[in-house]
Amino acid sequence: MGRSFLGSLATAVRVANPPVPFSGRGQSHGIFGARRDAVGQMQAMTAVGTLFAIVDRTSNATALVDWKLYRKAKSGRKEDRVEVTAHAALDLWNKPNPFMPRQEFVETSTQHYDLTGETWWVIARHAASTLPLELWPVRPDRMTPVPSQETFLAGYIYTSPDGEQVPLGLNEVIQLRRPNPMDPYRGLSPVLSILPDLDTSRYAAEWSRAFFMNSAQPGGILQFDKSLSDKQFNDLRDRWADQHKGVANAHRVAILEQGKWVDRTVSQRDMQFVEMRGASSDRIREAYGISKTAIGDFEDINRASALAAKGWFAEQQTVPRLERIKAALNFDLLPMYGRLGEGLEFDYENPVPPDAETESTQLTARANAASALVQAGYDPKGTLSAVGLPDITHVGIAAIARKPDPAAAWAASVARMVGGDVENAMRWEAVAHIDENTCQPCADNDGAVYRNRAAAYKDYPGGSGYVKCVGAEHGNECRCKVVKRKKTRDDE
Picture: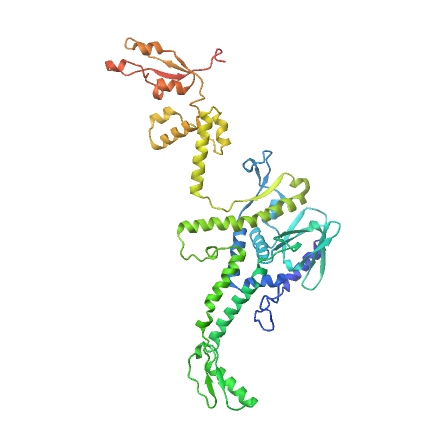
């Protein structure tokens, strides 16, 4: 591939088919009902405002998400992956071709997917290399799969605007599609399920426009007692149009030299075209599974519901589209790099905004689980990661005692929760200040050894002051403390 396809693509850009005007004339089955092909589906985007808003929102949201390349971890966990910042596949994805950055490429691809149920990427390579050099999004109506009885799919045919057919191999095309239950080779478009609604919405708009263009009232009848000649008919029609057609001529008095005016009883209100267009918009949104909020209708909504709607849109609309792209990159594009692509995977930044209430509930549950595991005797160093909590630096009870502020109190609660050094510190020793003022309990406990700091601090709260000291009865402050022992050979 390469020169032949790119030449045809350049021709397609120069002589792109202009949009078919939606006049409705000569189309007995409606504006869109007469065209059920991919061209009609794509043209529908610019014909109905609701459909345009839906496709524009979904394609923009999908294109704005950032992507990264990772080297997979042996553990299989995402948090253990290593980001790859320099790779040919990453360069290609960030700049698919000389004329499109990734954002425009993804937006174009998503438009094709939302309108036709298909996205087609054609890969350009250098004649002397098998590595992909460029990615091009191609209109679905120009691509035709070639079925095979032996291998299911033999290749593809790209048809240029001038009719040239370019054969493409399996390794030159990547297709993303919404599965079609009637055709395993093509995608399924939501537009096909709403063609009558699109017709109704467009006709309602055209009727409203014609209402204002034709004297701002439904038409009436000019009645004559005798037949008019062709010249009389043409003169009367032209004079009436000149004097009464258009919004500026609305409600002008009509002067008739002959004949009489018969008014019609049908009115704009009777037709209820506003309600009709609203009903059509509802059907279009239903086909795409999108709420009014997603396309900018914020009537009767508060901040909480707006945040919930934002999260729902990202989860239900953006993520599924990203997952299809991710599968194409990891299972179709990266294998084209051979050994250079082994062990790598593309992944996107999660577009779903965090839920503060849910995160708080999860954090509390994890903290309680960590506390229960530590109390059951499990090693605190592994407990935190086991329940999904990050490592926490322990500040020590003595530091908390010296600075009893809210932050220190919080650190103390964390230290108690996860155990930290409190339960794992090795032997501690009581040290008494021996002189004539030393009380007997303090002297007796001098040199006492504790297994850990928790036990030592139980007798010496905060690290000093023996709880059994009787010096206070004589007005003396206890001068004893506990210190961490250095390891000796006996301890070992």
